[in-house]
Length: 407
Ligand SMILES: Cc1ncc(COP(=O)(O)O)c(C=O)c1O
Image 1: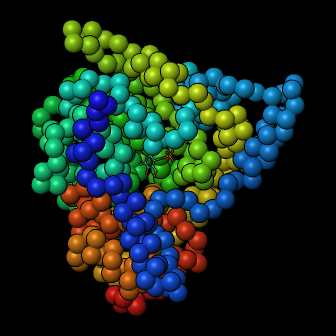
Image 2 (image 1 turned 30 degrees about the vertical axis):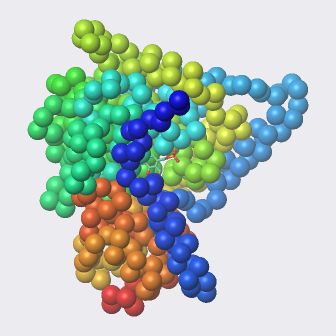
Image 3 (image 1 turned 180 degrees about the vertical axis):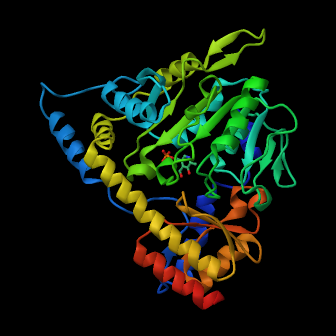
């Protein structure tokens, strides 16, 4: 008899965005003539940079000739891309990361979801609340939590992110092993200072813990005093893995390319307390279960690191940040307390009722789709997340409609 993985039964409803899509579809069936503006799902709307398209076209042409055709590539990613990343994203910022510490993949979602496989079943997991749901759900699926009671999975150490702590969690009071952190944050848009991040690195070193640092939104940081990589901090290379993605940086959500940094000095321990390289474990996993990102896509990603590429991706994030500023300004003027939207495409809005009530109100009254904060965790209740990933015109229209509802 084939038996199911019963940990799946603990999962709460379906994936958040599927719930939203269902409600929006029902609304559209009921009101087929109503125009909807989507400030919900965190998908980009602007096309790929020209440099990426050109590089991809060229690579596709190479695939058409026997002399330049490429079959399976290196599982870890082509050296041309890993070298560009190491040089531009790390060494240039004073973080010494070598190309062979970088693993190219088809998404930070997969990597942040898969990484937990490397760690013991009884690892104590610390997860922010609210949170990008992938970190939590993948640990539930793996059986690393108990059941769901009172809005939380048993056995997880939740790190509350509230207005009181500026949406940056405090250190846990009891020891933990795996710590998920994400800055600039999804969903709150919060950023972390160098000093605050250093306290987490020091904590991980003191407790032999590991930080899983998701920097998928790093390209939105505009304050140079903020850390872009956790490896800019002292001692982080022994206790942190960093996830990056070209999705939001360069519009690759549909093209798929990301990378994970696992420094060779990063350690994990066996039952006897013996040290092992996390790099060796991830390398084993990656090369066993993954066969590489396509050559044209890696060439497109490499093009981001040219002078022209850097300009183009900067103007992409500038565009969304301009939208974010408008949303933040309007929502604040309407009397809502807002976080994020400054070094982030997300604005975390404190509402005057429950998250799903706000979601339904916005959808029905303004035809605007947001993301209910409660979908990201118990601390998200009463909040909604507005996303700047849309055209400026659509964002401006959405804000005019908000004015009509609350103004
Ligand atoms: C915090 C965070 N990490 C990772 C991802 C996924 O990135 P990718 O498109 O590379 O899978 C997202 C996407 O929304 C995200 O918000």
